[in-house]
Image 1 (spheres, helix red, strand yellow):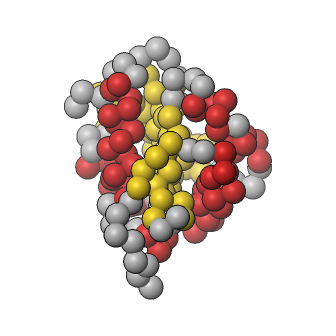
Image 2 (cartoon, rainbow, N blue to C red):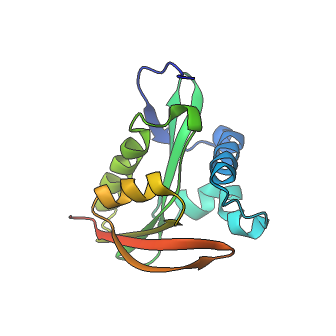
Length: 160
């Protein structure tokens, strides 16, 4: 089923988005079979303001017709590096380049914050995410496990 949405509106996370963000996060990982049931893996989502917004990072939501349908974040990992995290697009809104739109804004924000390198991880089974990151110049640096999930770790220069 295709859902009407003229344009994705991207804005900074607001406290009222919390339940929608949690639902989008869980639905995406559950669909891919990579949801880790241990809540310790998701503590950041219960303190988005503290983890992302107050720490030289960012947390964006994409809204269509008043509904949060996409999200993505940056978290500072060193003075020069930030991690791209929590990239999600609701299943009925995929294949519209919403993930690309969120990633583009995160790249601009990272450059504005002075980061020179971005890094991230995604599950080996997350083919669409891997394609998105590789198309945007991320290169694989290693593979490893996060909990029970086999992951690929990527990085890229903010200037590239």
